[in-house]
Amino acid sequence: MIDFGAAGATGRNGRVALVTGAARGIGLGIAGWLISEGWQVVLTDVDGPRGVKVSAALGDNAWFIAMDVSDEAQVASAVAEVLGQFGRLDALVCNAAIADPHNTTLESLSIHYWNRVLAVNLGGPMLLAKHCAPYLRAHNGAIVNIASTRARQSEQDSEAYAASKGGLVALTHALAISLGPEIRVNAVSPGWIDARDPAAKRAEPLSAEHHAQHPAGRVGTVEDVAAMVSWLLSRNAGFVTGQEFVVDGGMTRKMVYAS
Image (cartoon, rainbow, N blue to C red):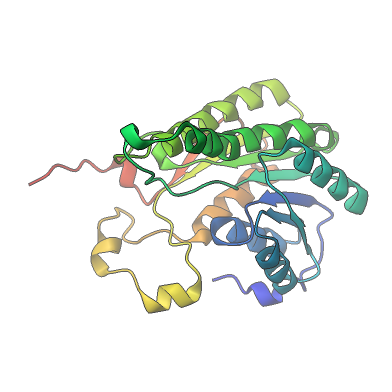
């Protein structure tokens, strides 16, 4: 696990990343990983109190802004604040999402809920890309969108979430073509990632069966996703754009039939 308490002691590498939905779970894991590699990270989330708390725990290389990614005025203001504080932006990680894939039956699905999920999960990354693009372009920056394996396969009653993540994969390659060659854009699609807080993991540990069903032999961790994101933001991925990277322990390649 990343030692979030010690991360702030890491020296800066001169680069600035903006990570949305970073107050918990995968977003927090990504922020902590990047900080451990010397990035200055701006965390954003709608949960202001928790965002302030985790940002303080991450140390001097973390900075928090409360923001709803579906609100263009808030997005524009936050990006301006980042530029005013740090003078540059090198990376954007769009992780913020309404993440519950189990909504309700199609017959009970309200258009309000549908629109809200798409506004956050799909509209948010578009708005962030729109407002960050001029500053990312100046430093040959990169964007990583956090999609989901549910963009490719579904469980019942997950129409809004699946549609938003499928759209995000398509938005990723559209942005890669529109913003290249100065800005690279890729997507990471996690499978089952145990992104719970440590206390919840201790209180209700996953079973051996949960882990064994994965071809990789275990359920994923936030570090698995963070490592992929970090590589995609690095110079080592300079020839990679418009792609989707599935981080799911092989589950989407596993053929399963009821016995």
